[in-house]
Length: 361
Ligand SMILES: *[C@@H]1O[C@H](CO)[C@@H](O)[C@H](O)[C@H]1NC(C)=O
Ligand SMILES: *[C@@H]1O[C@H](CO)[C@@H](O)[C@H](O)[C@H]1NC(C)=O
Ligand SMILES: *[C@@H]1O[C@H](CO)[C@@H](O)[C@H](O)[C@H]1NC(C)=O
Image: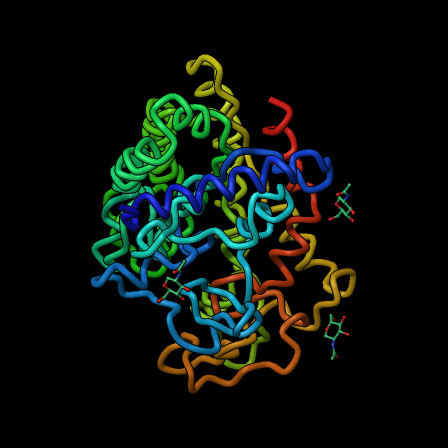
């Protein structure tokens, strides 16, 4: 008797046969077996929609207006996220599903998911405010993913997939914005931002090693963006009569953190045989967009397309917010998150070279 499980396995096998046909075509062959994503809203493809407590959910319009079907999938942008674009460039799939989505197919599991949660950070204290799934809890989700994957493809093949998967880690911004700059909880404990950076990086170090112990080998770890240029940060220091401008001290802090991260990752890599752990530079490409907006077709880099960053009770983006007419002219879609245009430019910038280097490893 054909149970639904048997049917699912058959469908999955058909998918495998199809993709091995595709493998004959060099241009469409997947460049990695799977893609696995950990972190915050920059890479949360919808987990928070299924995480009841989460304070930040992009489950309403105008989020997703430029996705196929204009669905508010939980992505904090108007369209695909950077990680989706990477998955597409690697010929893996067009959209990376969130692990918490209840009806994930076996084929979706086999090619990778996102464990990220909007509002998350490396510092567990950040989640007191956002109720997101902490980065430190995401390996636990990953463990249940591995169990399911083993059930689908068997133990040996499951480990091959995970060893070969492209892993992207993107978090840290919330720790600094929500725990240090705008709500200075951690500042009492760490008066010097450099000391708080070291604390966050220690957590990152532990996290990356945990992923390695679970089988990840090819990892890209994102640095901080120019935090001082996020519209929410510009708004937080806005003085009446003075035009909107980036907060240089916060950008300097981000540069310092990124320098430390770039020194840390090779030492982690050296301690984990067979690993390739690379720094993903988002700071410089984003700074270039801010300094040379015309090069990218941007007319606005200091306000979000949605909610337009005006100093009101909040500059969150919701269904009643004002929306800019041409989404591609805005670097940010809301007061924190890059627009699809920015993510697309990032995928065409030096930021993407990290991924190519992982493929060669
Ligand atoms: C390979 O893929 C490209 C792009 O999808 C397509 O144009 C081409 O016809 C394919 N070639 C073969 C031999 O299937
Ligand atoms: C899973 O559920 C979502 C939301 O209900 C739906 O949009 C999607 O099409 C479903 N996917 C599958 C493979 O059934
Ligand atoms: C929207 O902006 C982009 C980027 O500046 C530009 O290429 C495009 O032509 C614009 N579209 C319209 C309809 O004005």
